[in-house]
Every structure is written in C-alpha cells, then in structure tokens.
Amino acid sequence: MHLKFNIYLFVILFGIPTTVFSQNTDIDILKPINKNESAFKNTYFKLNTDATTPLSIGIPAGLAITGFILHDKKMKQDALYMGAAFLASTLVTKSVKHIVNKQRPFAKYPFIAKRADSEAGLSFPSGHTSAAFCTATSVSLRYRKWYVI
Image (cartoon, rainbow, N blue to C red; front, side, top):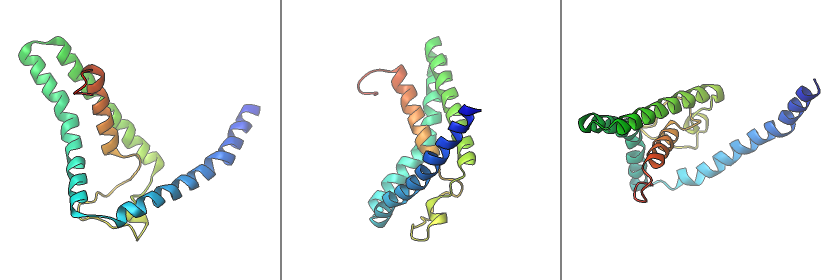
C-alpha cells in the first residue's frame, strides 16, 4: 500500500503541473509558427506530410518485390520486418491518440489558422511523425551506409 500511495502522490505533485505546463509551451511554440505562414512553407510542409505514408508503405513493398525478383531471402525478411514495424507503430500511435484524446490546435484555439487541407481527428501523437521516424529507423538499422542514414 505504501508504494501505491507514493505513486499517487508523485502523479499529483508532478504529473498534473507538467501536463498544464507542456500544453502552454505547446501553444506558445505554435503561435509564432502559425503567425509567419507563407505559401512556400505551407507547400513544403504539405509535400513532406503527403509523402510520409506512401514512403512508409512503398519502401517495404519495393524491398519485398525486389527480394522476390532477385530471390533474396534477406531482402524479403527485411521488407517483412519494416512492414511489421510500420503496422505496429501505426497501431501504437492510433491507440495513444485515443487515450490522450488531444484535439487539433485549430479546433481548440480560434487564433490558430485552419488550412483548407487540415485533417480532422486527434492531434497527439503525430501519425506522420511516428511513421516517418519508424521508416527512417528501420531503413537506417538495415542499410548502414552514410548516404542512407
């Protein structure tokens, strides 16, 4: 029981203020980014965002197809691992999104501009970021050449 009490005390003393502080910091960082928009920055970010899912699916698929053509068992295995990592990452990200249940900033704060192509749904954690990080990590762990990493 003593350990349980200590955990509750820790959450009350450190968990709640950290959540409030991090939310304020989040919005404080977002304000100047949102204020200084430009067509170039918006196009650049949209291209990056739109490329994430096709690359996260296309890289393992391309490796699998190449592995079958070349009869390369290792390449097919790498494709399976990378695809499974992407699926696991997506599952964890979607689950955490529903647990955290954080609205998108434009839905909660009226001073945040909503772009025409903005997604509806939950904001945290970022699905695009987790997919990009998962794919980059998977490829970098397997192909350790400087130009890949």
